Amino acid sequence: MPLPLLPAIAAGIAAATAATGVKKGLDAKRDMDQAKSLNATSQDIAKEAEKFILMAKENTNQAIQELGQEKIRILTTSINDFVLNFEKIKNINLKSSEGIDELKHFNPSSESFKELKQASFEAKQITVNGLAAVGSGALLAYGTYSVVMGGLGGLLVTATTGTALTSLTGVAATNATLAWLGGGALSAGGLGMAGGMAVLGGIVAGPALAIGGAIFASQAKTALNDAYGNYDKAKVFKKQARNIGIALKGIFTRATQLTQLLQQLDVHFVKQVKDLEAIIKARGVNWQDYSEAQQKEIYKCVQLAQTIKVILDSPLLKQEGDLDEASEKVLEDGSRYLQMLSKV
Image (cartoon, rainbow, N blue to C red; front, top):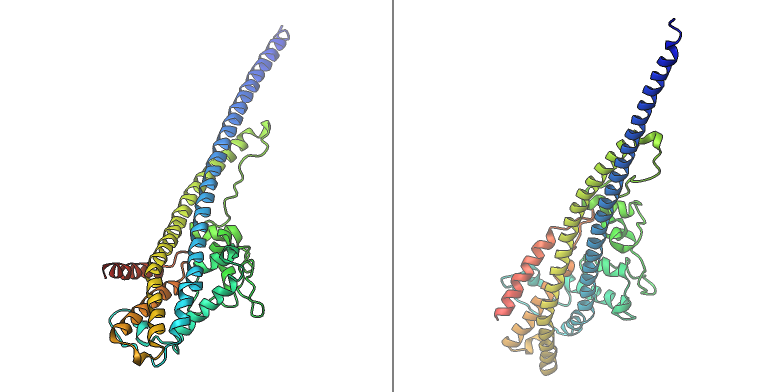
């Protein structure tokens, strides 16, 4: 009589299958819940990292623009006044002295002076409608690149009209970091935001993470694995964001320090230019007619002009987009010179 046992066996198999199904269902739900939780955490990490980068980016952008604005302001005011007065003087014989080598042959006919004069002219061209009207792209370029030696001629000012361009072009457009910071889309390379971040933080593809999306119950285990992957990506992005923040802080700090140095040097420079104007008004334009004390005052003015010119000559960023180490030496030399002036 074995046949009556079949229903019992079938019932047992059905019960076991049902139990297995329930367990799988519970496991799937657990995996789904864990996947959702991991994805939510990953999203929070990524959003926080992006927020951090955005804040650092905006602060650095502003600092570079302020440096550019200060360069333009000096070029169109005290430097312009210096150029207009200094080039009037005839038969200049500035003797060599200890200090900056460039001072040895600085006179109205020297190439160095002509560069400074041209930079002042170009700055006045782009501020024809006022300094406040200068575009952010122009400010970033002035804050980033040398504006005297080699100049930005042709980059920011058209040859025929002198109209400031609204976006960066040419050499500036190849700087991924500068474009990413707000100087306009890259015309060369097509790197854009990802390019700037690649320079600063070693990121190849930028911050876009495959986090979230529809998750189906039948794919709970795959979803959980994907969630772990997203979580790992988010943690990597957080680390990259930190590296980017460090790089941007370095640029921000250097730009701010150079802006402050230029402002402090200009306080002394304005006074020296006024003394220069007074000497010319009182004694004329022949160097030989000036007393030794007056010649020394003019020489001090020239020293200041040259010190400021060196700062204007020095780029903030390398062409590759990271901080130019040479700007640190310029900052140190300029700060020492400022301390010397303060003791006089």
